[in-house]
Length: 421
Image 1 (cartoon, one colour):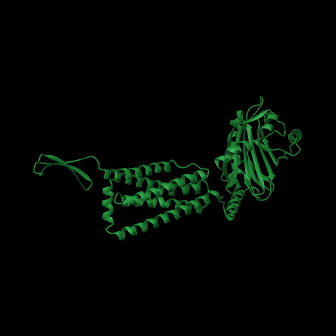
Image 2 (cartoon, helix red, strand yellow; image 1 turned 90 degrees about the horizontal axis):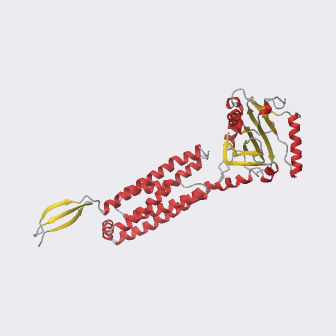
Image 3 (tube, helix red, strand yellow; image 1 turned 90 degrees about the vertical axis):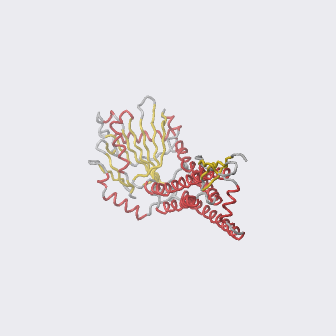
């Protein structure tokens, strides 16, 4: 018999054994390349670590984001934690099982794939964007499942099964446990999906006692919330706002007031509309007195109140939860009508819309550049506050070429506004 080489594997390590003509070993060489089993073990461990890391990130960061940034309720944060716990448990189980039972690993991977797809669909359903981490997890899940299916020989799988299941009774027991496990997985998936859909559809609100306490505290310490030397304006039956000394409230019956009302009347008659008079107009200081300095610039803060049916709009502390589709629609519908703008030889450019919260009050913020013929461009910033049976609109505007005069003060005015009615 001639000399020959034989490949043997022990404890996951492969060797080449050199045999002489009498089949006696003469030398042994270790194969440094990883075996199939090593590769699978590393893939499973890598997937387990990724799954655990992803779930911990979601359990820690997402609830904090909802509480601190979105100001959601504690219940919402708790439900989010509960939703991601099954993923964390699955990752821990994969680390514990390793490559000793690939059947269980494949079932866990299948569950995680379904769960991850549900997360993606719920994110899209809620108008958000799925995290890039969930797509990385999905890619790794599919890749590891393919490796397990392709690379582990059937005889190894059978051997491991035989080692774990020594009798037909054990096999029947395992099948029952598998069916039970899938039923539990299905129930958990359905329940958690319903929880997330509920969270998405609900508009979490601040409780009334908290809202009242905040408003009362804000009003009681109002001077500490506004810049020094600013004038406090008491908006009758509405709230408070403060303005710098560079601005003044337009006097009732002043020349500017009469001129503005005359223009509004002519404008309404021309367009066949019925725009109500402003509740309050704030302008550059000295304009009512006709000073030369005041006429060289332009700045306005206009407050309007529109009454609606009770409950037609959210209360001031309700969350609006606008989707991207809603914001895109508002870019057209919430701005001055094109016909109105064209009648004035104007246009609204560089439009933006966003949902903001100011002093725990909901608001839709609109910004745009108003361009009218040969006149200088005017920057316009409008806030729409919803208050159960009324919509309060605060419009701030100034000429772009006077930004160095007005920009800083105008960015602070809106933070002094509080509804008290």
